[in-house]
Every structure is written in structure tokens, then in C-alpha cells.
Length: 240
Image (cartoon, rainbow, N blue to C red):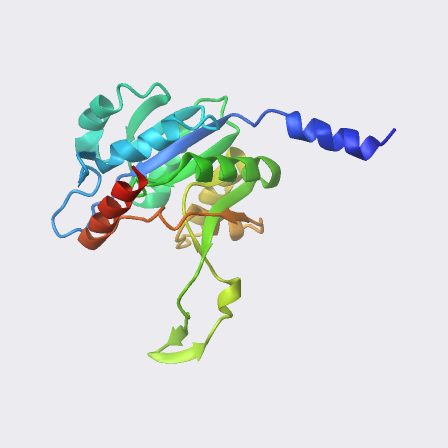
């Protein structure tokens, strides 16, 4: 009897851990030229609706919390009324890490994995979500990434210091998925240390944990500027 083969078979059929998503959409959209990014029209509906729908339709996600500005809670609650996995719409904090913590606190006690998603990535696919959740189920921390096409320079005081090998670079996207206890500890540690973190992976990395990178999607762009919004609209037309 091959014990290893049996063990591998058991791992394959074990159900995914209960995963809740926190969709962070509480920013001020300072680079959007006066456009409210959260509610920006994307081919006929608010951008945040498309982001929520992607998670609502993914079987790997069991519940969703949306984190937004205080003034948008009522409107986003109404927009999410038909999405059965949305269990709460809560106010964000003074910065993104605090907004993520607010979202984590609103998830149910059943949640073992937490998927943190930028509300401004409306073209995320169910495949990318599922792939990242499954990796986090195994590795406790995972994120999608795509190869960097441009040559990247490390610059100090306006002068090139070094050029990293492009083959080793990845542009990291969301959702970033973690064991919820691990992420909670990492964010609290970053807050205590007053550490500047650029994403949730950074918080986990700084406490010594590795993050598994899975295949991302070039269409999973983050809408940060009016030009990004136009690109997202064109991509969406191609996808439909």
C-alpha cells in the first residue's frame, strides 16, 4: 500500500477553509481628477459593483465585507442588496491598514482565510480569486502576480543604484489571501512599530512569513487615474 499516494489523495479532497473577503474601497481617489473612484461608472454600473460581483460568484468565497467611506455606506449597502454573500458594509479607517483591520473585525468567527481585495480592481476574475485562495489554503499566505515587462531601476538621489533581474520581478495584484490570524497579528505588529506597509503582503513578510505567488492576470488592473478607467472600460468590452 502506497501511504504517500493515499495522503496526497486525502489532501486533494479536503474542503477549502472557510474564506471571507474584505473589499477595501475607502480611499479618497486623489489621483482621479475629481472622479469618485468607488462609484465611477464602468460601462453602465459603479465600479465597486463589478468588484463585489466577482467575489459573490466565486465558490471559494463564503462571505464578503465591503469597507468604504462613511458617506457611502448607505448607497453601497443598497447596491449590494442582491449579493447574498455580502454580510456587512463598514466604514474605513484613517489609512488602508486600519480599513483592512475594520473589515477583518466585521467578518464572522467562521472565517479562517481572509482575502483582501482592492475595490478598484473591478476586472478580477473568479479564476484568479480561486487560484489564490487555494494557494493560501496550503501556504497560509498567497497573492497573484504578473511578470514585469519594463526594466526596473533602483534609484537613489536621482541616480541609478542597481538594476534588479527582471526575471525575478513580479507586479503583485489582489486578492491577497492569508490565514486570518496570521494577517491580524502582522497588521497589529506593523501598527505597533509604526511601519509603512505598501500592501498586506508587506505586513506578513516583515514578520518573517513567506508569501506564495500564483499566476495573476494582466487584465486585473487597479484603477487609479482617469486613464486607467478608460483602459478598464476597453478591457471589459473585450471580455464580454
